Length: 58
Ligand SMILES: [Zn+2]
Image 1 (cartoon, protein in one colour):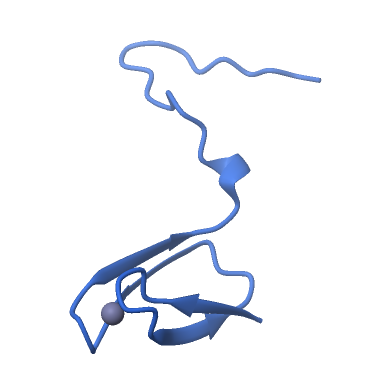
Image 2 (cartoon, helix red, strand yellow; image 1 turned 90 degrees about the vertical axis):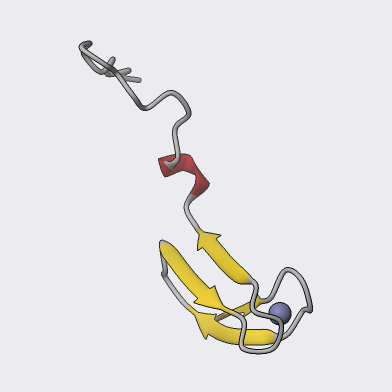
């Protein structure tokens, strides 16, 4: 389990395991914290307006 802490006040908001996306509003300072695991899934330039996604096979 990994700890998820507030970016602003470092309050422990919860623990997670195998979570991809998470959004928690800190009850102490009101900061909305976002968590996004699995950075490899977040591919920049994932928008292909009117185009075809390029599949890279390795
Ligand atoms: Zn906070």
